[in-house]
Image 1 (cartoon, one colour):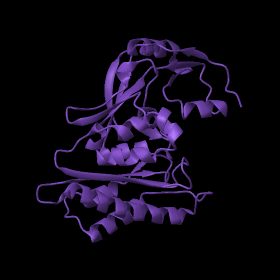
Image 2 (cartoon, rainbow, N blue to C red):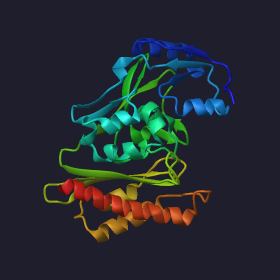
Image 3 (tube, one colour):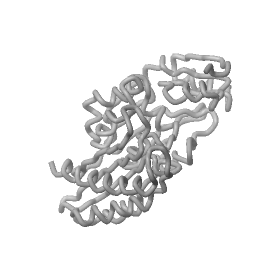
Image 4 (cartoon, rainbow, N blue to C red):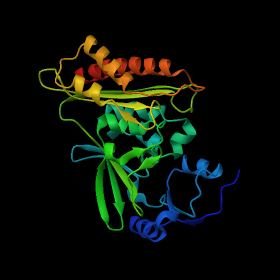
Length: 288
């Protein structure tokens, strides 16, 4: 199936891309990896009149540590994260990268494109929730940083305003001992997640949990923070019993649907199992 006709622009500067988006308004869409947008256009689920291809803007292709954060530019591919030594500053980020779809998508798709897409079955926004990331947004009127909780509005909906685009995402690197993981159940390589759970723990000097992050994939109408489970963990000494209680709270935060991938109650159980295992793995990584 062919997509509807569209106009195409490929500016080679960020200023040029922002000017084009400002002029086009709601008719313009950003094209980076295209691994979500192009299939949607082929199935006529999206029909932008103009595409603004940003692949020539080399300044957006980076993964680096900056001011206590791991920052990923809008043109960094999933496989760039897999290969990056800097990405290892965040366990939960480096753990998730090899799980993204299949090798073809990982070579072309971008982290920021996935973040902006806000697909509840996508992996990166759960990771960003667990890591408490900030999304870097820029438009013709200036730039701003948006916390991931505020950036994700709903199902396939973000908080970008007309003429704005995502230029990067920054994941804070905690100062204390930290560990994290991403666990994903899929029917086959490249399939969307049946269930995914991102976990991160930061430990205080006395070994207690200073901060916890838990993000859930494919078990709600949007990627979901298990905030009650996070609150249950903060300030406590880690233990198997505590992790089991937090896992139950994370499962309660999910509202999966019965579909071809499995029964809703079974998916909730997988959330609990992955949360408990993920927290244990995060603790082991923080301790090492």
